[in-house]
Length: 411
Image (cartoon, rainbow, N blue to C red; front, side, top):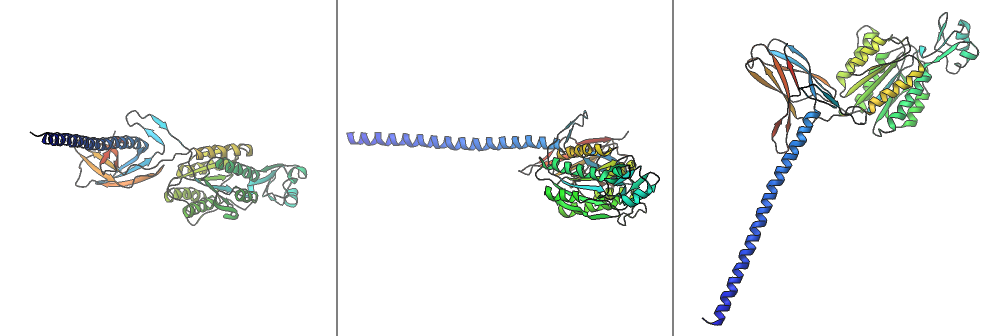
């Protein structure tokens, strides 16, 4: 063989080895890429599943009431915002965070909100320009003459409006000290809504304080008027998702009726106004404050109950700031829950068989909703057990069913 042929053969062999090596490297890179893609998908899926498991426990939905009709069941559910509940051991862990809220402070401006006790009838009507209600009681004291209660009429001034002004200013400062996205509105009520004492939702502290400084006495106590106006303002200017709070303060009895509620009784109109508000607005809590021993606590408690809130008692004006501050703390550390669940499965058992009912529209945060399930032709006999399962659809379209949110068993 010639030397040139040998060189060519060696050169071709070397080139073939190089090509083979490059092909092996290329195949290895492709294989590694495919493995990495598959591994990344597995990691992503595991991460998504871990996130979903966390989301399941943020959706604490409880069975509040079960009513069994003829072939159907009415099921009342409540979403407990910010509470993680283990169905098995019923232990609870509260989770709170500062959130932004829309707040309406509804304030009593009735004549008893500024009074002078211990004055004479003549001094009450002539000097204080107030109403003489009995031998020792002067209400509706003029704000420009109130200092004369002590100095001229030798009485004791009870300036509840002044305390309400100080308390609401303190609430405003407290809320806006951290919750920059919150807004506050004001509603004054007496014979009706006092427009001059009312302001829409705003974060302008100066405008709010100026409005508070303008508050003055107005005849009678229309509590339902104040609540209805607060609801109107929230309906017009808030969103379903944003937490909404109404704070209702009163020092007496409701004595003006509302055609909107039309119960025929001022007290019942006030209570129904709160119940109507709860049906109209999502994410609503109504707090109530009774100022002094003349406040109708029973009515205010019922209003708070209808609004899923709490009643607070301030026996004197010095306690009022503390009450408003306490409410402010609750508002700033309110539950903020986001619905991560796509829908619910409700499983009904009759002891031997079961039927699954799907609920698409689940309750919002702190919301109570009633659903009807028609079991006619699907499940017969007495229902002995009901379970609720949250369901989440993954990004890939996979349906993941979580652990039971709550279980009801017939006893």
